[in-house]
Length: 289
Image 1 (cartoon, helix red, strand yellow):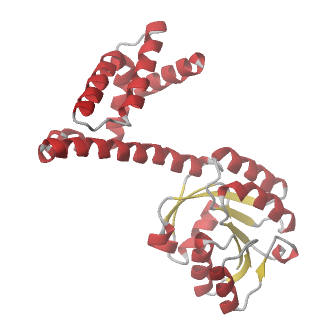
Image 2: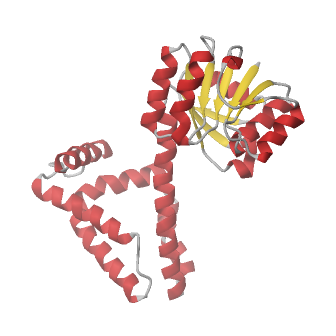
């Protein structure tokens, strides 16, 4: 097996070390090498190529570890030199549209493109950091990484762009929850009721996450107007505590926007399911733009 690592930053060096340790033949590439990258290549007696070239001809896998802004450039520069049937795993943070375009570019050269999203901190778990993969040859990439102790989840039937989309969606949820948790617990701590708050949230804690978030969306399209008032009152309470919220103004805007759409075009279903609620939200949000 011959693998090329494009981009010798922290991510690239991590997987280069893991693959080198099990005897995989490596080729390395970095346009602007750091001291760490140069020392690693020197230690292994390998050239540190400055750009893609004919040296890629016999490579079976390329692992792209550059920045997201360079992701498409790498695919465009690498694919002309690869043999038909080679695989290209894109571990960058490029957005879904860029990764889909990169996949199309790779396909025109007979290269199998795999969209890979890094789902944790490389600096904490190194090659064992969870990865999410989408695209043809994802199973082969999974096997390659698992040979060095990697953890790769393949999304069955998914297309390039889906893995990074799911990473972004997860971030929307976790970062939104993080910001809300900060404000929630600061207020609870200041009032001396934090332990009791945990007990009052026990019913939520015992509800499966999918059921809970589906319930929020289903009932949102019925009760948005009333809940907007509750959000406004909660925001005023935090102001009174001298803990002005940065999160709740956006929450209030979301509820008010839904309430305004309901005034113009009611959902027409007394107890909508989540599919009906999302369909109505998407249709009316698009129409309002």
